[in-house]
Amino acid sequence: MKRFSIKLLTIGLLPIIILSCTNWTNVPNFDVEEVEGYRPVYATESEQEVKTLPPREMENPGKIYVINEFLLVVDRLKGVHVFNNENPENPVNIGFIQITGSNDVAVRDNILYADQASDLLAIDISNPTNVQIASRVKDVFPFGSQYPQQQGFYFECPDPSKGLVIGWEYTTLNSPECYR
Image (cartoon, rainbow, N blue to C red):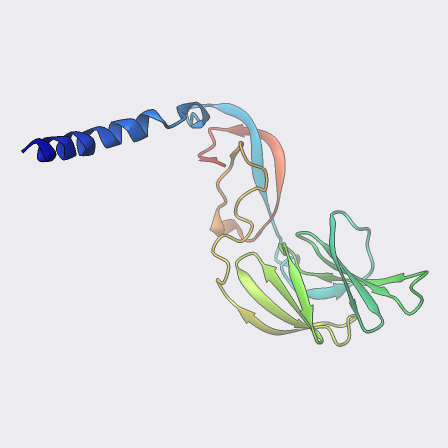
């Protein structure tokens, strides 16, 4: 009987102990009317196409790949810059592969693998100045870029009916419903 009472007391006190250890000061208050936070930026229909474009300035450079005589430089959420690297001392920017919403890429043989929001793309880059989508697998990545990278901020919840989220702008929000 004594063991049963101790077990019952332990089971009854366990939720109280766990809840008392929770730090409730970091829980957001969703009753705020105006607060600084992040609003999603949506791609236009043209921006969602994977295509080769003329060279452009890098905004947020990332990984670098060398494939054959080409140098590929990722530009986060935008695409991949293509350089002719026949003369490594002086690479020449020859084009840009638009892959809007892409956070990461990998290259193997002449295939560039990239995420585009929730989809996985395999892009034939045997001719980097005229790329072709070899395949697209939908809904591989459940969240895509549906959340801002920054944490500890309110943000406007993405609306899938508005399209592909390609970035986040810091602004004043009215009654936001999301927090990260």
